[in-house]
Length: 97
Image (cartoon, rainbow, N blue to C red; front, side):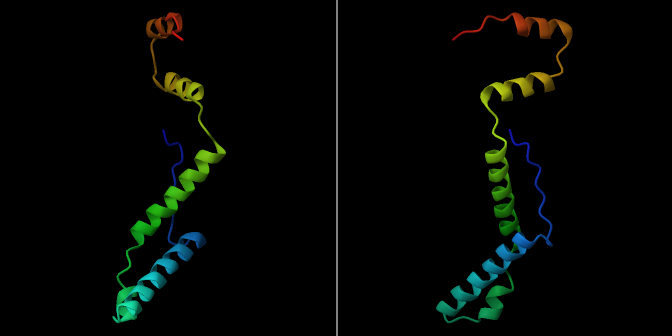
């Protein structure tokens, strides 16, 4: 369960640094292949960089707010929107260890 709803705008400084690094990598690759570096840097797609930044944010969030199995089960139980009968049945089910 991912509780981190991350959205990375183009103006975020770390995203901009990552995107510039991707462009620089494209230029360096083009130079190594004796191609036009300016043409290589132009088509760099920002979406893979954005997804990488979002994944970094999610991993940081998971590290700061870990969900133990017990807490996860409690959240799922609360969000299940059980009626009274279902709730009573769930609370009386014998625990198997």
